[in-house]
Length: 92
Image: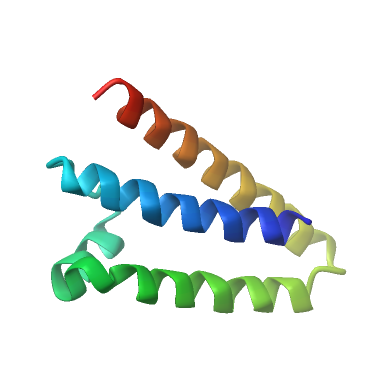
């Protein structure tokens, strides 16, 4: 269930990032910023592919306690990013 939530958060992150960038905002993650500079509006394909591949690997190893902790941490981090992006969208 957490893996599906992270995938959903990733989709929201892409949509919100595109919205914020369209309003003149900037990407704070230097890696994603570089990808956006290279691929512009098609950066979401790269981001979705990398996150999906990583989630498949985490899912395959989810029986290990450290991986469960990593999945929880990633989910929490993504939730915080989404809340921040919603704040930016609502109070721009």
